[in-house]
Structure formats: C-alpha cells, structure tokens
Image (cartoon, rainbow, N blue to C red; front, side, top):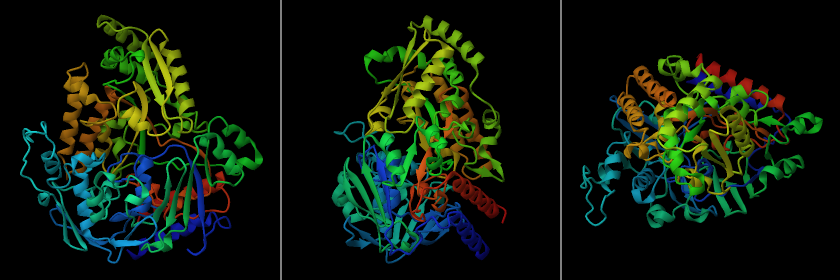
Length: 628
C-alpha cells in the first residue's frame, strides 16, 4: 500500500509539473474563480431522479459518495473511511467518516451526515411516484429492492392489486440498513463484483433524510430545496441566468478543492460567443466548433490557446432507431414504423453510415480515434488482461467497419421489395433532430444526411434534419419518441458490461423496441432473443470470464441485427480551457470525471503540447500502476 501511495503522489506531481508557471496553485485562501457559459438549462437538481448528465453534474460536485476515484482511477475512501465485504460476497459494511455535515445554500450547518441519509435516499429512489431514472441500478443488486418497488406499482389504483406482486413487503426488508449512525450495510441479491464501482453513481448518493421526507417531489427543484455535503455548495441558481458554485470551506477534503468558485452564465448563443469571450479572457472554457477550428489552428496566437478534450470511455454514442414513433403526421410515423421493423432497411442505414466522415466534422485530424464499433467502448473493462471488446462474440465487430457501400445497396434492394409488398411508401421520411446547444451536432447531422442520401438515393430515404429545443431536449424529444433515427449516448454507471445494456432494456426511453416487441411488430422475435441473451448473461454473477463472454454474445446480436448502430466514444472537441483535466478524478463510469475537485485553475489556456504531454504522462502513470 505504501508503494502505491508513493506512486500516485509521484504521478500527480509529474502531471502538474507539465504546467509549471501556468497555474494558480496556492492555498485555499486564494480566490480562484472558474468562468464558463452554458446554453441548456437544467430542469432539476435532484440527483436521485435525473438521468441527464447535465443535471447530475450538479450532484457530482455538491454531494459526496461513499468512495471516490483518484486521478489515475484508483478507488479511495470518501464519506466511508473503511469498508469490508462478507466472505460470501453478499454483504458490504461501511464505516462512515464522523463529523461530516449538511449545509444549506447559504453555507449554514443543517445536520450531520449519517448512515440514515443513505437509507432515506434509497427509499426515495425506490418510491415509484418520484420516477427515478436510475432506479434500475438497484434492481437485481440490492436485496428486495425491485420487489419493494413493484409492490407500490398497481394496475388499478382503486384495487391496489397487481398480479405477481407481494403487497406485504416492507422497506425494512430491503437490503439497505443503518446499523448505527455511522455504520451502513448493503445486502445484495447475489455476489456483485462491480458493486463498489456502482457507489460512485448518483443513485447511491445520500440525502438529508428529514429534508427529503419534508420536500418529497419538490426536493432539488431549486438550490434552496436541497442540502450539500460535497466539495461545493450551489449558492446561486437563477434559471437561464447563472449558476454559482462556492467552495464548501468546511468540507472534509477542502485542501484538495483548489477552485474556490465556479461561475456559469447562461447564453443561448454560447457556441458563437464563447470562443470570442475565451480569446478575450472573459471566460475560462470554450468549445471551438468545426466552423472556426481551422481559423483558430492557423492563427499563431489563437492556436497556442487550443487543446482538446480528453478521450473518455465513460460514454458511448450510437444511432438509435425509434420503434415507437410519436412524431407529427407530416413525418409519416406509420410509414416509418413499417420501415424500421424491417431488418434489411435497418441494415441498409447501418451499412450506409460513414462514421469517419461524420466524426470528421468535430475531429478533422484523427477521427478514427473516436470510432467505436461496439456499444461498450474498448478499454472499458478487462479480465485477466483480455479486453471485453475482444471477447469472441465481439472480436470481429471490434476489428471491423460497419460502413460498406456495396452491402448498403444490396440491403436497400431487398428492403424495397419487402416493404413495397407491405404497402410502405418511398422515400421513407427519417426525422433526425439535434440539440442546437451541442457543439457541431447540427453540422454533423447535415453531413450524415448528405452522405447517406447520396449513397442510398433520395428515392429511397429522405432524412429530415431538424433543430430541437436547446433546453430540456431529452424530455421533449428522445424520451417521448419524437425522432426516427438519432444520435444518442449512454454513460456507464459501474464497471461491468451490463451497464451498457440499460438503454435497451424493457421500459427504456431510447429506442422503445420493447414496445414493438409487445405489439408483435416485425422486430418482436429479434428483440425477444436479445433480451434472452442479456438475461442469460446477468445470471452469471461470479464467473467473470463466462459473464463477459455471455454479454459479448448479447451485444454482438444487438449490433448484427441492427437494433442500434455503434458510432463513437465521447465526442471530440477542440477547446480553450484553463484546466488540466488529468488532475481530476477519473473512472470510465459513474460521475468521477464530472468533478472539479483536485483541479487547479491555470493562468492561461492549455496548449496542445501541454495537453499531449500531460496525457502521455497520465498514461505512463496508469501503466506503472498496472504493472505493480
């Protein structure tokens, strides 16, 4: 353990030394204000219910978890000082750090953080009326969690009866208990080797019990209706105006919180104005869009300010087919439904998508670095040195390329014949919306439209690119099915391939293929088989090699039958930023990479040379840890 701590400290010194002379690395007494714009407003700060990265970024910075990760991805104590697992792998017991407090938005002490706050949060999440988007992370993991949740769901509110549910189950039977004020116990359904990694996700965060009970559905609807125990306090929240995070001076690990204030200002024209403001040193972060990146890189002064976003494997991007279209009649949802249930039609779109060309919009130099041939990114998890993406079911897909012009045209001909017989009309209208506040998404959609229509022909498809709302895009577009074919993403919640199956589960709000299955549409048998393969993989909790093999088989089936089209890992952005991301917490799951804790505000933007040097040092430090 002592050698590992020395290695970690040395690695952090090397990474920060890359920026020697550039950073404000003084003590906590020095004001260090990080300034940025935002263009998409949050609808809630309630980290217990949201499923949006933009929204749980708030929770990540104001609420602590039981454990956390350092900048090299090593697990460390946080609110829990110690923990132990029972010999059978079914019980985890955590000893909490004593003397930690809850604070209101003004920094007033409101109560002590206890084990009961984790229990209260779990009960809240498992209450259906609150509609937690992450409740599935308890199901099949925490003992009786799913049973308790289902016991509150009724087919008929008047009779309160639902077939197969045990209405007598009580929350006391759920495997989340406070043994005393500072001892928390989780009891699992079965041994779950990735359980500790799950604890860095929002659904395992605590909430102050008395306030949660008092607030109910109002909890977290603004910054005054929640309490804080993390590195920052959301001291100001003015919708479509500003967010201000203030350093929690009483935080247990305050010496590692170097940025004293985070100031976010709303501006609907962020994409256009942020680069100008960053150039003028009015803000500390800006994304450099595809329309101006060449100008910036060719300018001697501006190019010295530009670096890149770090490559992450915590998010995977894929194109979703919507099997239950709810968009307006002008886009011909019934005709789309006929088409999307035809596998040859889906295969034609999958084979026709030139991902390199589309990704080049935001990453013109090395777009191939962002291509992801599977839903689960490579280098996400491995077993005995074998990457999950290289397991037999996925190996051929991982090393291949779905773009195939000849195959696309062949699938097209078969699809036309089959769909004509079913009464479909051509060209098939394909509604493809985008969020205008996301850098380059509009331009990327136009490239996809032009490229796919040029290959497949406008007699076959008519891709309609349309801007959605900048605010609440997910709720107004994807989650209600107002799209036909759209780029979606998913972030890993824990260190296991099962996490990448969640966007496609029953009751998902990504592609709604379970609805098509239940209606007996053309895709029904394919979806049933996929779900059977996933269930078989989930049923293997201990034999990791066999588990990964089974999940790889299920994922390969999903891709091979074009139920989704893998696209890329996290989007690549050219940035002007005064942060060294490699100082921050890292894990390819949970909320670690969203935290500002551990990062210094630099005096000038990171250059590309500084970024590359820091990245190479980080990789070397990670490799050194692996080899110890």
